[in-house]
Length: 224
Image (tube, rainbow, N blue to C red):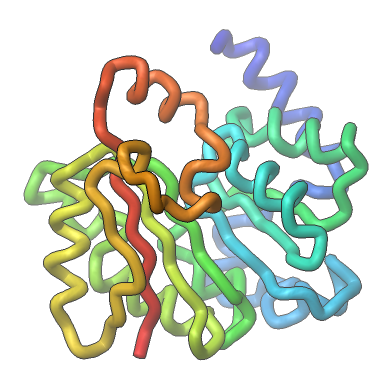
């Protein structure tokens, strides 16, 4: 994408009522006004909130929002030029149950208060294979600690990835009494019993992976 297109999208994002772009300093100081107030001040309802972390173009966020009008959906990504497409489509379709946040995911506990979130989706994150970048993996224990804080009791986390390494790494972490593995499969599209929510939509990159015959893995867990 050219720099002119990026700038145009950044400018357009500023006009979208479904895009929130808090300053990093505000989050670091933990004074984000919507934290703890998403139901009352943004969505104006008490419906469950579902997050997609590293949402890219927002395909999953859009799909889930159109399929579940009784839930609210928020896509989070630091790359606003990517989720511009999802935000624009949501506005064109007049979807009231969807929002996008431009922020770094390590600050997620400053975006939401304890128990404010019902469900989390992690779709095709960077597996961060190099050892020195372990802490940047979205399924690293430090991230899971933050997810547990913001999730309500019984809330679940979904991971969908083309990386067998990340799938295996995450399963290894789940060998812990703090977690309950609800579902796992190493090749979800070759499983006749796959849950519809796991295969109902494909992201831009997922389609490329499938064309390359790369198996897509999926798992769902919750905290005990």
